[in-house]
Image 1 (cartoon, rainbow, N blue to C red):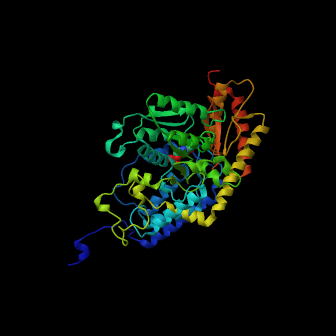
Image 2: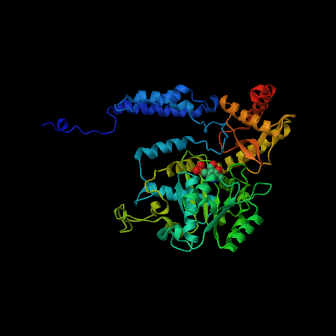
Image 3: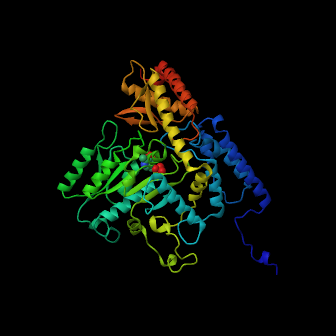
Amino acid sequence: MNHQTAFSEETLDPEDWASMRALGHRMLDDAMDYIETLRDRPVWQHAPQEVKAHFEGPLPPYPEPPGEVYREYVDYVLPYQIGNSHPRFWGWVAGSGTVMGMLAELLATSTDSVSGAFSYLSNNYVEMQVLDWCKELLGYPPEASGLLTSGCSASNLIGLAVARNTMAGFDVRGRGMQNGAQQMTVYCSDEAHSSIQKAVELLGFGNDSLRRVPVNGSLQIDIGALKAMIQNDRANGLLPVCVVGAAGTTNTAAIDDLNALADICADEKCWFHVDGAFGAWAAIAPGYRHLVAGMERADSLAFDLHKWMYLQYPIGCILIRDAGHHRNAFSLTPTYLAHGEGDRGLTGVDVPWLADYGFELSRGFHALKAWMTFKEQGTEKFGRLIRQNIGQAHYLAGLIKAAPELELALPVSLNIVNFRYTRPGLNDERLDDLNKQIETELQERGIAVPSTVTIHGRRYLHVAITNHRSRRDDFDLLVREIIRIGNELAAEPEQLFPAL
Ligand SMILES: Cc1ncc(COP(=O)(O)O)c(C=O)c1O
């Protein structure tokens, strides 16, 4: 009996390897072309209605030829993405990716390696080395533990989980938050990222326990107000457990006085967590390390590699000064994953199982893109690029100061520039609308992607420069176009203010 006819066993591997290989080569060529010619294309294109409709079709129960599936991607997916790899994408705070990062992700997924568990595996050594490099670059103690994450939201969650379990004074893992004798409180500035609130909520502190400390004129946490809030909470029988410092806020890149926060935490016996999503990397820019002085004193330090280290999404990191506290918060080993039972084989232990340091068990091999890109470029170049972005922020601020139609919201402290188009005779509400519309026009016309933020109650264009492809002439163009579009819109007030 013919074995093959008796069992029609299937696989997802290609039926025709040669044509799949050819298609793969074409995809890679197209992807390289896409990156090489980014500058020739609009930053962003609005997906038309038919594109949305295309994705409301039926399930594909039967196979379609791989070339046609790819064609659909080229027609309906490729052109309508957010565009953050483009040289003139500066909205929110986004990374721009690297060619080696893309290739490394392809390699990492070609072996489909599960990372962070099991032993005597090269992919784990790569991740441990990337963690060591991050510690060295940021001046964090080498004995600290760490974990690569999907981003700084996850890193903040992990850091605050370790803070909670370490500072609660009782067995939170065993007994649960409802058994704490005192309500625990966490402190951050009014300008802290929303992921801090999410973490506080997820960890059962409750949003009411998150104290939002007012900021000073430079939008840094007000140290006096923080001290007063801690004392007040203590006097009311609450238990202050953690202060979150910002090394670069999303709106303005304000950096809190991290040394002052570290001192307060030492005095008050609080955990010191730093959210350095992008700003932590100012530490490697020649001449700028002083801006984040004190960051190295944090008990936990959260940051991204997919923003200001320019790597492909997703990749973030959390470092914890005391590896024991870190492990205590997360280690849990089901019998089927028992390890440490020998010095050979997948269940031995040669490097820590990173699954013991976070909430996820199965993780992809995202370390490879960091490892290969750092080696390909040399880490010094990243420092120079970060310095270049800071220089570009000051260059843009200079253009704004020189243009009577434009107004800076604040002096530039790092790599974010907030400013607005102004025109005599228009009040603040109208300027808010006008600047929102300028943002939309810049995006819709594919010229550039800034975003907008609200500072002191007013709306500003927000240019966050975490882009290794941007050049000074991109900022010249931005300023020219903002003035042109602003003048256009202001000259046709009925478009902007239909009620007038
Ligand atoms: C200061 C800050 N913290 C945390 C985050 C969250 O990081 P992620 O988007 O990587 O989860 C961001 C995102 O922009 C941020 O700017």
